[in-house]
Length: 278
Ligand code: NAP
Image (cartoon, rainbow, N blue to C red):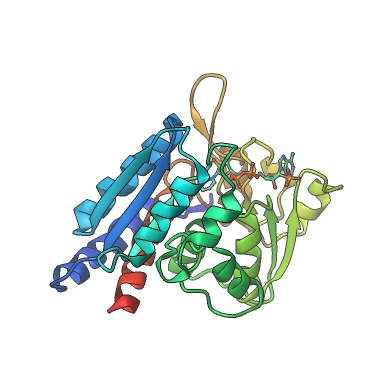
């Protein structure tokens, strides 16, 4: 039976250390989250971020704008926050309404306050093998989780399924930096099953139940990033936990694996940006 990669336990450990760290500072970090429109999932994510930040002593403000805010108005607001010395971290919750260019928004956030690590400057740094201001939250959380269980990636074949800008793409670069051999798969990948069979580590970020135990190599490590609700409303990941946990040596559960690590990384990034600003 596989060992569980327990994201909740590691989150609690890291956040309690962070709280002590923040308590020591006289001025506090300030995270501003911009939320546009009425997307219910985004509202929940933003609320969780605010609550977690406040528990740690981070000043947290959510700026909510209606769906019909113009791009110019939004960009002007971001420029204002860039120039506000009390604001140390800016996050624009995605997705944005269609009439607003995500690229223009990301281009406007100053890299020094880019808490998600999504601006072209920080992405460029990451993809050219340099160090960005901060690393994107979900990939960073995955590496923290693997590191906590002393899982080394050097020389390993790591198969990432999914190539989104928030998970697969940045993660592929961060794992290359760990000297792993990286294969990135997506919806056009042929022979996905054959590729997965050769993986020492499988990291799946798809949002569909696509991996079963029989597809895996014995003793591989499984990191399940996917989250979706099945037809019965139950929260599930990409991996069939029951069969996969019989084959793998380590496995992250859904919920309780990568999810808690993403928010933990956001808090770590907020502190990193704050400390760099001092
Ligand atoms: P996304 O932008 O929709 O990307 C999904 C990726 O999966 C795409 O690259 C897509 O390929 C690929 N894909 C789709 N069907 C596939 C198939 N049958 N075989 C192989 N690849 C396939 O999603 P995302 O934003 O990265 O999120 C992915 C999942 O992770 C979602 O369930 C999301 O909720 C979850 N998530 C969790 C966290 C967390 O903190 N736990 C954070 C972020 C995301 P194409 O590129 O070819 O379309």
